[in-house]
Length: 131
Image 1 (cartoon, rainbow, N blue to C red):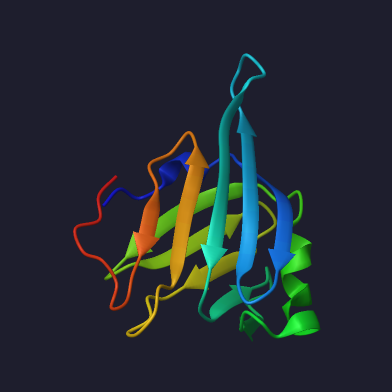
Image 2 (cartoon, one colour):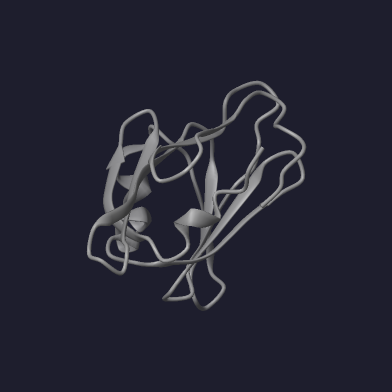
């Protein structure tokens, strides 16, 4: 499975919550055209680390407890890493980090949209990650 390095340089343009967490990313090419329009859907708990190292565990479906994710709005992705069986780590330009581990029983995260190959990390995770 391909690591979605195309997210580097993309900006968070939308966050939405219900029983899932949805984060929309948009990036433009040198010609001004949209080169990436993608949505990350997280269905299991995720962690967010601020620039000072403070960490909070977030669980989809918990309403206002997901408010820290609102601070990602307009942040730019500086780093994308997928390790192990599908642990996603995103770094942002303000020092914030976001991490989602694979879930043993459920789909944990997926990414789809324009400008990248779709990714779905199913129960137990996925192997064979490459750039």
